[in-house]
Amino acid sequence: MDDRLFRDTMGKFSTGVTVITTKHDGKVHGMTANAFMSVSLNPKLVVISIGENARCLNKIRESGQFGVNILAEDQQEHSMIFAGQKKGEIDIEFGTLAGVPVLPGALAQISCEVVSSYVEGDHTLFIGKVQDILLEEKEPLLFYSGKYYSLQTVV
Ligand code: FAD
Image (cartoon, rainbow, N blue to C red; front, side, top):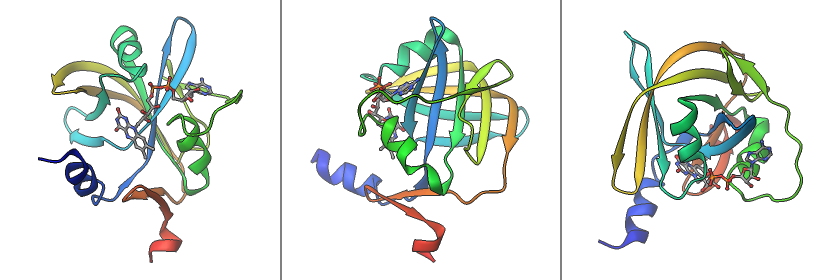
């Protein structure tokens, strides 16, 4: 099957946008990801999927923890920065939740401890046990077919 057809089809699944954060060698690293899902309520588990070429991959493996920051509608720039689409010296301030770096301003900040990982094809699935959550009343940033939207532009 053609890669383009697969990518285009998967892009038709509209999602929110997250920035995955982790700390390695004393430095915080962030990466934009929309492959995020809730897995279990008891215990509270989530899953993220990280590509084999992402620098984030080994950092999460080694740190054993990650933050999931669900972006608010005014954080498209953050999505672009952490997807490597906006370059340059950008100074981002991070917070900490249960010892995990998180991104202030996100509509939800979720700190997780890696409980298992599965290499599947060219991605690794990390199952995270949720340690703590900070939830704010904000509208989400949305992603569909390679473009950003807000609830206002959709409804
Ligand atoms: P790098 O390329 O090392 O970092 C990404 C960017 O973040 C760089 O420009 C870097 O300078 C910046 N950055 C990192 N840390 C900091 C910091 N502390 N301060 C300031 N800037 C910093 N890929 C997946 O594997 N899984 C997904 O689910 C996924 N979903 C995506 C969803 C969307 C909407 C988009 C746009 C991209 C998605 N990607 C996904 C692609 C992924 O975001 C990029 O391939 C990313 O660049 C790979 O990250 P990396 O760990 O190699 O990070």
